[in-house]
Length: 228
Image (cartoon, rainbow, N blue to C red):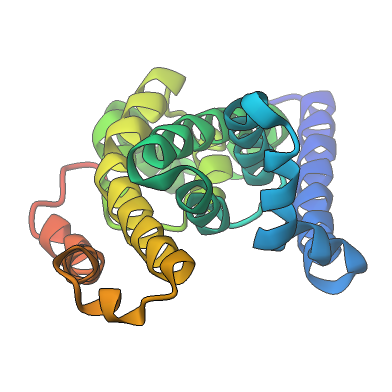
């Protein structure tokens, strides 16, 4: 890599680092944090009327790109749209956000990351690229933090195709469980009948939610080649 390319890659990487750090500071330590409260976001989506689902999907994707937690928007989708429509819109928003974040990481950080990768680390980078789909699928199934992984995979040689489909299939089960769980809690809260917490639906959603935490343990036992 030439000196000019190194400087260009470093400049992009510094820009990415400042962007991510700025988002963390903005939404954690300034009044802007009030704009990501569930109640405020709910009002924003509902203000779009019949265009609410589209607004939600774009809001979800934008939140991911701003390094906000995906769980916040997953819960919001369940609250606004229920289990099945909420799951659909959550998946659309998550996939759009994950795709955009991947390209941000690829454009701003890949050149710099490539310059830092030595011969030994290059072997891991090559292995990840050769097993891109399996690697991404594995990391999604073990609940590796969603938003950091979106940007992080952009720094590797994984193709977008492998990343996209690994993410798509990797978040389906967890996304449905979380949406179902949050939607059930929202139904109980709206009804005001707290006895519904011991209904079969509530208990089933709780069981699925609790069981999802055992997925990483099961997946690690069938860890695919090239994931580490």
